[in-house]
Length: 544
Image (tube, rainbow, N blue to C red; front, side):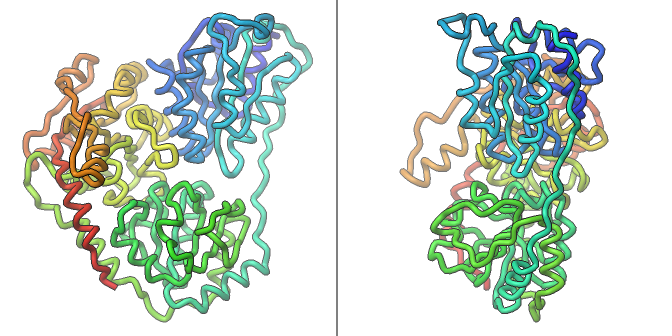
């Protein structure tokens, strides 16, 4: 059989359901070998969109999302989405066609050293140089991408190797190691520190979601009466409605939840990646006693010196520590939680137009079920989503926070709907981020995927304006013009609605969900709330 046939069989063996990408001259054999395959190829309108789809699909399912391009510019277009997945700990496989090995030693049309180009943003980057090594490379790529901490594997596939013949080779058996049980001595050490703590607090990171340790986290908090704050990427790992939830931590400014860290003498970091919220922001004085509970050893940082590290299965660690530690005598963060909840709900009846960010998010929450999925693009709206959206389940609010790449919203929502067809998928996006990959509306319509696109429209790079106003008190080069978004959506065959009063948003969202197709909602937003929030947090007095 052809090497490309074996390659596709290896992908099938890994359980791949979708490949996102664009056909090209140098991946012709792979595309031909996919005819009749159980894998569905999703033809996208840009390779960046394909990589973002693979990114979010991998993050939601735990199985590596796969994206495919041709060589040269096709491969470089994958980089942003691929890097986003790698930095946000989402398993992804990037595959690029390549020129024949007979022309790799000299200047040649569209040929780049892709292996070295992808190496700094991947866990494994390799070229297939011989037919006999295909099965090993594919198995290793998936093993590396899906192993904790997940990330990217890149495969460079020369066109002449793809068309060669290979005999006697089969896909390799798929194997995954079980996470180790944490050492008993470390469990006892952590339990002792927690038992003697006066004001402990938990910071739950993305690793909790990846390890499916959400129930163990909630039980831990309940049994020991310890409040939990989540990072942006761990939203929903404890329901926001839970009495021990303090919401989300991660803003650069000193928010209410940061008051809990100011007071804490012990910070229990569970599944926490430093890239999510750097410790110099919550441990500036380097006085916190830190317990690190994760599958991987802690990163080295002067603000993250451990009192105890518990390495192994996160859920097992939490259960074992909770069984051994003494609970707090009372729930000490009740006043702080009440303040946070009241502040988040303060704009429920705000009828200002253009709408405030707070009102948009509250209405969005009312329109969705707890299991529905919100994919946030990157921009000023992301900070409001991260701070205010009240997730009740893990992986229901997807935020790019490690790489924080604009343009992820619409492709991510498409991937979310493919992963979970029975749930509503909404992307919350700014007008700038939306137009970076808006062409994927056509992809969604063509493949029959219903998504809601909620565009926050202010005709500015709102997040940059926020930073400029904070730092310099003035702004520059952040304004632009937008098309008529409703007509733009309709030109693809999608539906479009424009919100013209605050009272229209909730019924418009409900109608968009009921339409069961691709729907764009143009929602004007008043970002003057950004600076009001900055001033408010700058003058914040902790309620505890």
